[in-house]
Length: 336
Image 1 (cartoon, one colour):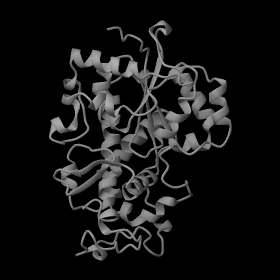
Image 2: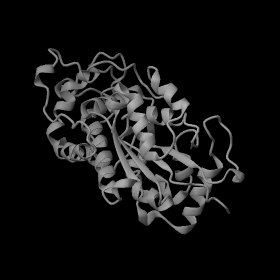
Image 3: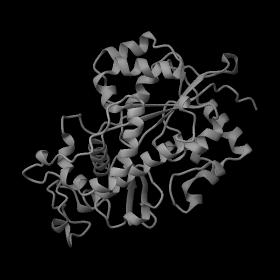
Image 4: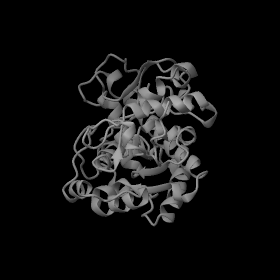
């Protein structure tokens, strides 16, 4: 079965809620790139041996040992069958080799495996300021829109977004701890895997640069990917960027402050990961992440409502003490 149509696929990597959907939606406008129209959950996890149910729900991670010759051919064929260009035209063999763009948050835990499937792939590592990113993960949990595993066995409720290794250690912990763990595990996994690859096979960029300077940022990215910075890309980067399809609420300056206290409690444990990220950012001549905690921005009232004493003894079906008018199990009790 001929599925040798992939020439240097481009795979976006990031922690959940880092802006990868926005980046994917921008790049997919390029006339040079093909996508499957969305994320690759079904293509990969449709194979029983790669599905989390066959792995005791341990995590979304896949490693190079999960690769087999049979999977190699089947997965590439699965991607090929769903390929569409920017005008939604279906791929045919007569077109020949194409540049494929892929984005799925679980890929942060699957880089070594994907490198076996696509050994000439290029990787784009997108990072977002940690406080903003973790706050956005918390917001996604509370929204109820990102449930990946309803009634996850061993958790006692629904799980949202990425399922990292060792997630069971988080049972009963506050939502801020869960979100910080997801952020940290995704970024650590990305950095560990990319460090094994030649420098020319991966590129780093920040969400802030994408928002503040989309034209320059995307132009630089197309140079790395070796695709034209065509008129369609110039057009979307020349105007105010649209919201991504998964935006929960409109962006706002310092929106993360509503989770100030919850994130502050996790901050010391995140420093080693931030140090590693800064080393890479410096190498790419990008602005390092700020490690200092902004005590001067502390809200006079805890907007995060993460005071654990206020949640003591609250039943799952009771109104949440934070005042959201949701049941506790659908709000601050999500991670319990």
